Image: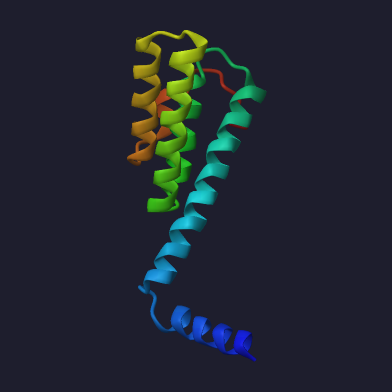
Length: 127
């Protein structure tokens, strides 16, 4: 009985106000999960394509796709991008210039810029 009452109240809360904090929080979390999925898909595509000089394109595309979901997606893209770049600079030994260029592509995509700016000539249209 208590569970039934809680579910009814919860559904009223969620349906009654589009701007309720609960609804906003839920949307943020769903957008963040979707954004993480977008970032992972861009990473998988980058690995599959294995195409010279396509790295920045996939960085921009993953961030763009994630950010299009809303604030949660943009947040997930930033967290994932920053963590990846920190790991790359600490572990892989890639230089600061490569990290800076990756972060530029990340921000470009996250801010709504067209990822095709970084698309290398000849990259299959599948990507």
